[in-house]
Length: 334
Image 1 (cartoon, rainbow, N blue to C red):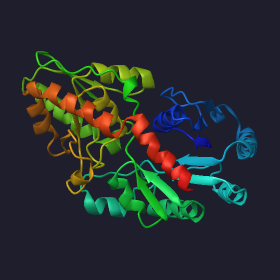
Image 2: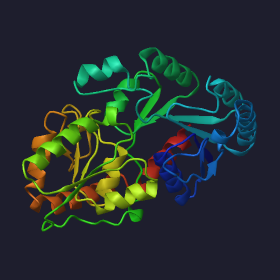
Image 3: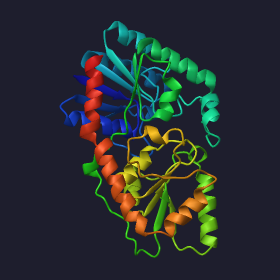
Image 4: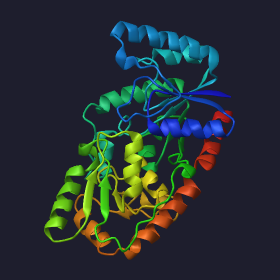
């Protein structure tokens, strides 16, 4: 079973590594160098080439890949070619394919806003663009994967099979550092990939208000750093704030829980019950973040307990060997 993952992303790399540990010949490929310095197995470095050179290199890589791989696992709704014409080629060649959606590329504004007053979407992903992209993918690919039921709702009627599988986290790569309740100046961190989408403005307003009220704590925005530097900051944090607008937990939530940290994130009320039992995330939205963070800062005895619950949750539902088996089952069914 030879699997190629593309074209970018830390979750994709983690998943590929987990599959390889299970004996699958899995390879992760980034088309371009990533600003967070992720380390895939292959990087085509297309960002360093002219448009013509990029086209030639992708075309050559597709031909080579068709000779070498059995299964193509596409992430973020992207494939080799922008127009998706490669899907027809792969189908004709008898190759097996899986689509893995991670967020904005399927979060249709009309549906998202119906269930969530706080949600913001990326303006470049219009209703028309999302519909066209998903329709093309679903014409050639039967199986789609998402990490939660917030995303599942957007494509449940688009593909023949939609699988909900939590983020892949190799818990062994995250040494827990549970917060010390005696810390008189705890560190609160927030790592937005997009301030607009994640609710960063509301978090900063809450931080400023709480500091003006006299609460003693530090705050660190994790931006513009490498993946390793970001992980280092997460491991030193006492409280981690993820996203406040999307309505589901992000990859940062999973990483923070793996490090044994209390996590604040907005989980839509109608989706809470769809998570595995025991989800220890502290729920907050842009309207409640100030009160929720204040309560957590003023109750340091809760930090270690939440941190341990989070670590246990990751080991039970997200740990790489557990999650990888679910992907292998899908691959075998193709």
